[in-house]
Image (tube, rainbow, N blue to C red):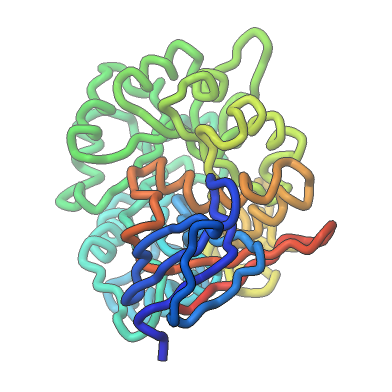
Length: 382
């Protein structure tokens, strides 16, 4: 049984200098005390030995797991969702946005309804659904990637309302191509409904991106992918985003979607921890071995964690969010503290969640990196 009072000593905390004692009371973080100021008491103690202590990961773009694609979820699959959320918890994830990609409107509305009515299991620790990420169907056909052309929709208020139906409140983030909105009405409307707007699958110019940011868009979906790359004469959507301090860019750090060199350039241009967060973009075979799997009406081939359509089009990955943290460190792109923050604190900031330790459940990850060795982590069960 977990003690009601517990101290974690000699812990390193993201964004804090020196070592800390973390005081836990009734499963909640009650106080953070610099170790040099800590006073001895009789409470049970766990010595962190200088390891990093972080909140759990937040995955703002995950398409499915354990064989279930979120656009295909049915009302009678609650036990499957329970299993997925328990699995994600074991993968170090505290919360996630199930991502619904371009699909028939009826399928989108069915999936939105399922997640809007979702009641998470109380029988086991699990990752919490924080709302839905709707990636499509309002994407530029020329940058659709693996999204099926036949289900893309023009971007206007009538189409948006038709797709959302009665489930607007279930959507936390929507990815769209801003250049498709000829009236300039869509982003302000969606912001008025409490939806975070992310720009992606887009050919937007700098001017079009800047206009979208001025209207209220605050995110970019999987930087570099499904958009023009940075160019010295036309920096495009990504160039506009990097220079805007109010905009957060998602990054897939699997080594396939973005070269480690380009990931390093992005992080340096964004001053390392400002405006970048990691996503997995994981597909439904997450947690399953490599192989060939159904994907809407098509199939994907998964090899070493990379998923492609049979024609070779990159469809996504089956690597978890925290693999991206480990990759950034392994590649030498950034230090451990920065990499951990990109999967834990940065995505919280991107959607307005609290990032302070105090007052939060003690759902910690412990990160360990012996000298010159790989970064590893474990979930602390407190």
